[in-house]
Image 1 (spheres, rainbow, N blue to C red):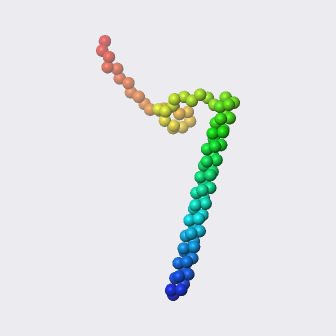
Image 2 (image 1 turned 135 degrees about the vertical axis):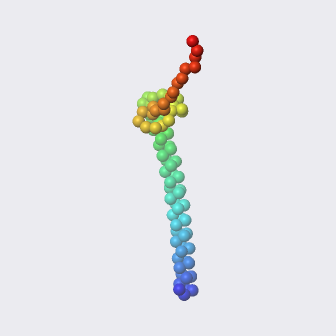
Image 3 (image 1 turned 60 degrees about the horizontal axis):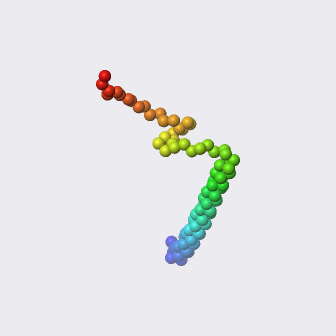
Length: 85
């Protein structure tokens, strides 16, 4: 490769790098806008659902694993009795 084509190639790659960074910034900005919009819509949806009474009261299910259809725990518990008569 002659030095002139190397210089042209370097300029081309630098230009491509700038374009890719600009595209990345644009896409990241758009993604952030969409995430904010999604959050606003979900809050509004929740507000509408609570206004119309379509949401059930929240149960404290912090200790229940989120493992499927009904959320019931499938752990086996072995209980032994140490009481003396």
